[in-house]
Length: 241
Image 1 (cartoon, helix red, strand yellow):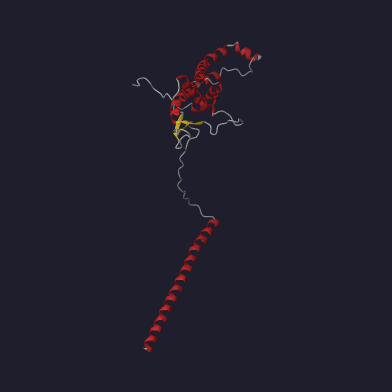
Image 2 (cartoon, rainbow, N blue to C red):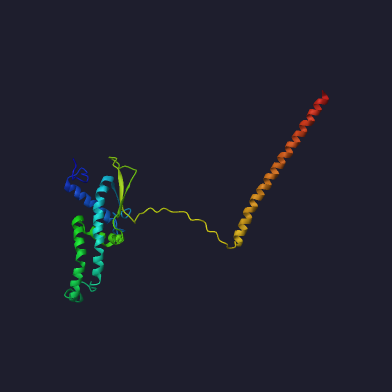
């Protein structure tokens, strides 16, 4: 029985499995970094392709880290009003360091620092923690959960035919449905160009109708002449008989 045994083993030992999920979570977060001039820059920001089972296992870990970072945003905003504007280790900064303002700043930023250390203990990557707190968390400040999505791919993985899936942040690569707009009818007078275009369009069907009528008349005259010639031939043959 699998009582109190949740999650997937994924064919790995516990330590190997935790390291793999941690690295996959860091890889997803680091796709949001500014890597324009790097050699291994991501093809699409905020997206990784992995197997379906790994995506389902790493998704709660990523959601947890984003939630911790999002809840630390109010503390960071409250600490900004007590922060020093001087350069570090300067005379102004040292005087601020010994003032009451530094104590208030320390008390205000303490929850954010604790959250940052908590995420660092989970991810164990300083660059991923920085990207998470500076770029990803402010994007979801008003979103209470549901920061990622899993999209199953139709093409299996080459080699073992494993089911592949896309794990990505929402709001970055969303598919938007486009609706058609109803035509607008106005009472404005048509311009001379539009009037000339309408007249030309109206003349074309009339010319086509004239050509069709002349063609029908020619066909009717030919049919009449053929009938008359056949009657004359019949009369001549009767006289000869």
